[in-house]
Image 1 (cartoon, rainbow, N blue to C red):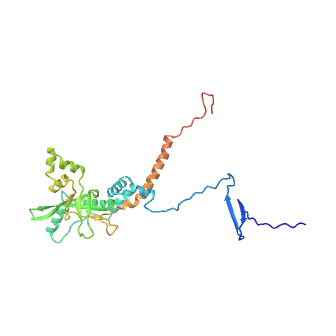
Image 2: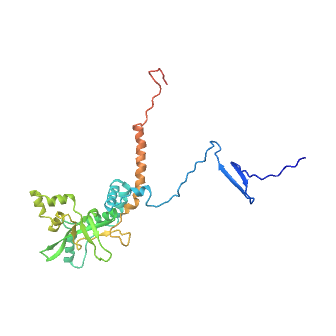
Image 3: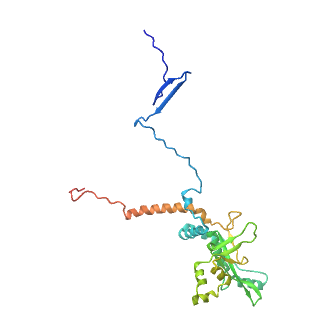
Length: 289
């Protein structure tokens, strides 16, 4: 029986076609090319980058308001349109307060404060409720008081208070300043009134302080007396100068809720107005279902 001649070994890997040669040092070199089992071409390769998450880069975050005016506008809209949001805000704003009476040891002092707190031009209890609602809805309440000199008693006293709209008030306070500076943004109606030459408008201008008219005519913000303005703000950061609304933390949830509502509305409308109409058969060719 003839002996089999031992030749150079060949290494073939399953699923690949390989050719091997022997180097002078006895090392085995291999060249392989992968082929597809069905089509005979190369396997397609897709590279996917790793997922990076940031709460600022989500779809809802791109829809969030960027300016303070827009944030307060959203708060006003959701308070007016969402029943449970307005109910919870009203509960927090009104529940802690009840009507009260002013009592002091001196009858004259008691009467003085009662005349100031409960008069035909000002109601302290109603004002407290309005300020509390502004605090919970917008994150801050900005009262502005009007002080007059009472000649009968020979003293200065508060005549009334009003709440300024947070969107129309600019608060400026640097790191080393103890007292903030308040400036009022004039409305379009005030600008038209201050610049009008109509006789009725000129008569109304007499009731507007000169500093207000001058600021509006020169396109400047209206400076407010810091002794007559105060701010109750819901501060969430040590360096913040403005309050943060409670409703703002619900913006992402409310956006998602609106998406679900719009999807349900679109689904319901298809039952009333079908998108697709199907016709079975062809009367012209005598094809009937």
